[in-house]
Image 1 (tube, rainbow, N blue to C red):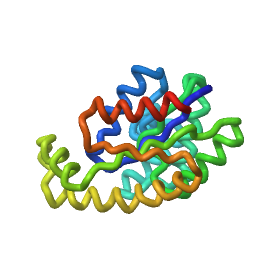
Image 2 (image 1 turned 135 degrees about the vertical axis):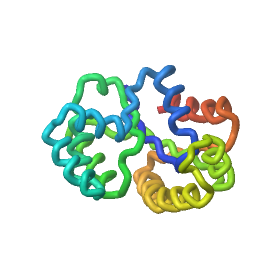
Image 3 (image 1 turned 90 degrees about the vertical axis):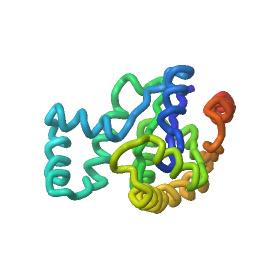
Length: 186
């Protein structure tokens, strides 16, 4: 059976690192919203053109355009054996759209992995990256903005019954051990 996953967690929670391990061990396609946007913009698709209008104006791309891009990506052949969404859904309306889209196509989300990490550790990890824009103030704001987006999704997937909270504040191998335990029992 295909494993269809969603990764949730605040910046610095280790989603990307764990995604790399999952791809290697389970041959699941890792789908990043950023990659979908970049591909649509680079290929100058109709959706890319629409998205660019909003992006050029400094506005958020509306859900209906983002949803359409994700639906298009999920309709491709390489996701039949399973996929892992990273960066989507970003809000409950997108989550509802995704569930409806998958259901209409005979699929569903197998698990949502929520990597929970204490704010202080997230702050340390993000400061440790050494990026010029990663000041304590910017990081604190980024964490608050992301909490406002992530926590309603955590609640949503808890209600749907597919949420698995993973302590992401430990060593990488310990975190991945818990991820494998979830995936191997799907």
